[in-house]
Structure formats: C-alpha cells, structure tokens
Length: 288
Ligand code: HXC
Image (cartoon, rainbow, N blue to C red):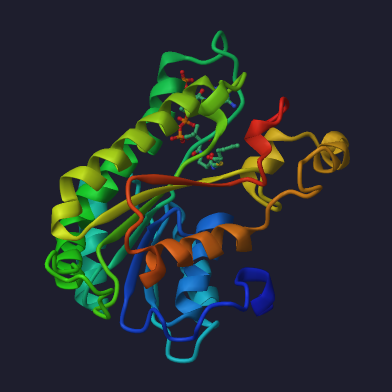
C-alpha cells in the first residue's frame, strides 16, 4: 500500500541529501520506525530494517523501497534484539549487501500497562531486556561501522569554517517522556527509557572524538501507533486530543522530520541531546 509523500515527510528537505548513506534500524517494521526509515530512503538512503516477525519485516522493507526508484531496502526478520549474535549477523549482512552503516535507529521496544503489584519480576526483566539490553546490543553490533563512518565525516578541529564533508556515524535512540514525571502502570518502561537516555549520553561523550553523534528522540502521543492504541482507551481519545496544548496529537511525520534533521548536515553539532517531539504533552498536568 503506497503512502502519500506528504504523510511521511514535510516538503522542506532536499531530495538526495542522504544519497549513498545506509541506515540500520531495529523495530523497523513498527509504525514510528518504518516512518523514520521511509523518510530517509525518500531522501536518498538505503536501509536495513530489523524485526522479530519475518513476514511483517520483509513486507515493510518492500513497502518502504517503493518511495524511491532504485532504493535498496533489506528486511531482516527473526532477529531478537535481546540476542547480540543475531544482531551482529544482521549488521554484518547489512554492510555486506549495502556497503556501510552510516546511521542507526534503535527503535525496538516492548510495552504493556501493568501496576507494580501485577508486574512479575520476569515481566520487568523482559522490558529491560528488550529496551535497555536491546539498545546496547544494537549499539555494540553497529559501533565499528558507526565509528568508520563518523571518522570519515568528522570535521577537522582546525577547521573554522563549516565543512562540506557530509554526514555519518550517527545514532538515534527512540525513547519516551513517561519517566520525566513518573507514569502509573509504566514503571518498567520508565526505568528502561531512563537507561536508554543514559546510554545515549555516554556514547556522545565517549565516541564524539571519533565523529559519532548520539541523540534521543522522545515522541509524545503519536497517531496510529501500537503504543497509543494500547495506552489510551478509545472512548477517551477525543477529549485527550482536545486537551493537548497544540490541540492535536503527533503524526509519524513529526518524528520522521526530527530524524532527518538530526541525521542531516544541519544536525552535525547536536549530540548528547534529547529532542522531545510531543507538542508539550509532558509539560501538561495530564501528560504521560
Ligand atoms: C503484565 C505481562 C503482560 C501484561 C506480558 N507480561 N504481558 N505482565 N501485563 N500485559 C509478562 C508475562 O506474563 C511474562 O512474565 C513476561 O511479561 C514476559 O512475557 P512474554 O510474552 O514471555 O515475553 P515476550 O514474548 O518476549 O514479550 C515481550 C513483551 C511483549 C514486552 C511482554 O508485549 C512484546 O513483545 N512487545 C513488543 C511489541 C510492543 O510492545 N510494542 C509496543 C511498543 S510501544 P511471567 O512472569 O508470566 O513469565 C512503546 C511506546 C512506549 O514502547 C511509550 C508509550 C507512551
């Protein structure tokens, strides 16, 4: 099913800005991450998307590839981010088939609503393993390639002028805002997302000298996502939307545009940051 361009990317970006770049994305068949990858592919990148479900991942890859003639998009299913070896194999295949990994999106996540009393130790551990260990495994499996790309595109410290050498060696973790204030029935996810935020900060400091940038995108409530469907009962949706500061919830395109900015030349001096894309939702008293 083809998605109209205006639904997945705004019209302010220049075609081809990501020509010859390769993006590796976990959770790549999900609504938000497939939207991020679709925008990057539209602007010239090739991509490798990773998922647990083989059929869903391969279908998403095929669908994303339709946005640009000549785009190469590989879907690698049956990869559980909790298992380092399967991620490493996927990263190696991505480099073998597409030549490099310039950008990484760590988007795989697990979530359900449960009170702390209902949450078994194993349930807590499952979310920690998918989100925190999975993000770490994703980083670990792709780091040599990020460093290679970052080093190639690193701006010389003697250079006083903005450099035209392009962009590479960038990672974005998809986090959330629910741990900023504390969200009921989300203790497991809040702890996990706080860990991911901390991981990103460490990478920014430790790998900045090798040209790698690391940032967080923290989406607010985004239409048509599994997260929103699960967390918001349908009979309260209209009131919830009307109560938002901008009078709307987010679209996948809002997250895709933020991703394009952070991976583009425009974002080259932004690292160790969290870009909250939530229409100020979390600052409201009812924010997640
Ligand atoms: C309480 C639950 C539960 C629930 C599972 N468990 N669902 N406990 N309430 N609704 C418990 C199980 O009983 C088990 O504990 C443990 O969690 C592991 O469950 P499994 O099914 O064996 O694990 P697994 O198959 O690995 O599934 C992982 C999962 C699942 C996280 C539980 O929901 C999943 O795979 N989700 C991936 C997709 C997903 O959630 N996407 C949404 C992302 S949205 P016991 O003790 O019985 O062994 C998102 C947005 C966040 O992240 C921001 C929102 C604002």
